[in-house]
Image 1: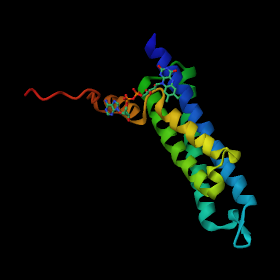
Image 2 (image 1 turned 90 degrees about the vertical axis):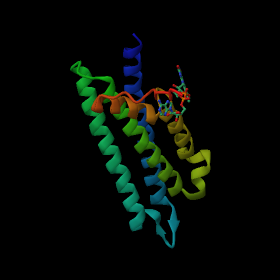
Image 3 (image 1 turned 45 degrees about the vertical axis):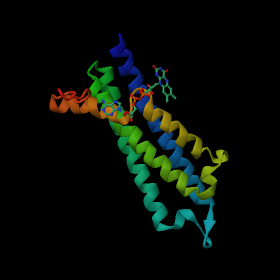
Image 4 (image 1 turned 180 degrees about the horizontal axis):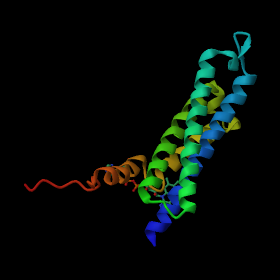
Length: 157
Ligand SMILES: Cc1cc2nc3c(=O)[nH]c(=O)nc-3n(C[C@H](O)[C@H](O)[C@H](O)COP(=O)(O)OP(=O)(O)OC[C@H]3O[C@@H](n4cnc5c(N)ncnc54)[C@H](O)[C@@H]3O)c2cc1C
C-alpha cells in the first residue's frame, strides 16, 4: 500500500543523502590536499581541518543512525516517524556539508568539473522529493507530541 511504498522510498532517500554528503566531504578533502595558498596546501590550515572534521563527524553520525534504522528494518521494527527522522536529519546535514564543500573549492566549486556543484544540486532535489524537511518534521512532531499540525484550522469568521 501507499504507506509501505513511502516508507521504503524515504528510507532509500535517507541513504542517498549520506552518499551525497560523503561525495562532498571526499571532494573537499582531496581538493584541500592539492590546492596551495600562501605556500601551503589548504589541508594544512587549522580552519580547513576544523571544517573537514565537522563534516566527518556529521557523516559518522548519519551512518550510525542509518545503520540502526537498517537493523530495525531487518527486525521488522521500523515506523514512518523513525524513517522521517532519518530523512529530515540526513538531508539537512548533507545540504550543509555540500554547501561547505562547494565553498572550500573556491571558484572551482562552481564548475561542473569538480562535481561538488552537481552534488549540491542533487541534494536540493533529494531534500524535496519524498517530502520536504518540514513535512518530515511534522511527521516526527505528530508522533512525539500526539498533535497533528499538518492542517491548520481555518478561522470561523
Ligand atoms: C526531482 C524531483 C523528483 C520527483 N519525483 C517524484 C516522483 O517520482 N513521484 C511523485 O509522486 N512525486 C515526485 N516528486 C514530487 C515531490 O515528492 C514533491 O515535490 C514534494 O513532496 C513536495 O511537494 P510539493 O512540490 O507539492 O510542495 P508543497 O507541498 O507545495 O510544499 C511547498 C512548501 O510548503 C511546505 N509545506 C507543505 N505543507 C506544509 C505544512 N502542512 N506545514 C508547513 N509547511 C508545509 C513545504 O515544506 C515546502 O517548503 C519529485 C520532486 C522532485 C523535485
